[in-house]
Length: 230
Image (cartoon, rainbow, N blue to C red):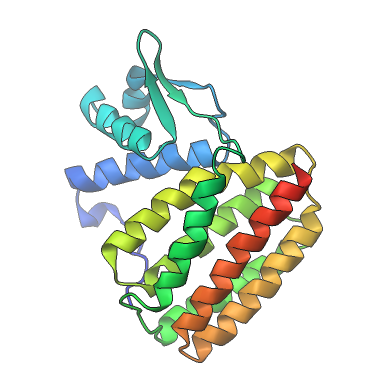
């Protein structure tokens, strides 16, 4: 089982061009999903290049990738604008996520090793701690970490790429609803933690197909709750 790479130190040497692009993409995508860059925000290539200590060319490439992922849009004469996340417009994306997530248990499944299960146990513990006091942003960051971890349960690279793209397209919707007080946060946290405990049991049993079905049900029910509260 592949685990997250350890933190780099200066002794590791400079990042490769590819790794630098990936790091910039990760940071900007996370800011969009956490609404640090809300819909309508204009992203300046010059400002971002200065912040990340690079030229405008890699920033331009990252923004083009984010546009392909549906998170930003290039508007002639205006620049690059963060797109809106509308539950109605993204309904079909949610439906596709549900169906593709079910494939994780059948397409090149990866049986979790002891290290992976222990890592997921730590996530379950972390989830328990935010049930009573967690904020919408804290929960969103936590959900991202859970998603990236579970994505490793399939070695099918095209499937992983599509699932990741669809996930981040829809991630902002939950946070927007939570901030607008449309959701019972404590109940949402409690439901999610219960689902994590069920996932942990499936992982301990090496039942990847069951884990995929639990994730599939989570996405479907979470979307229905969003619809009911929108």
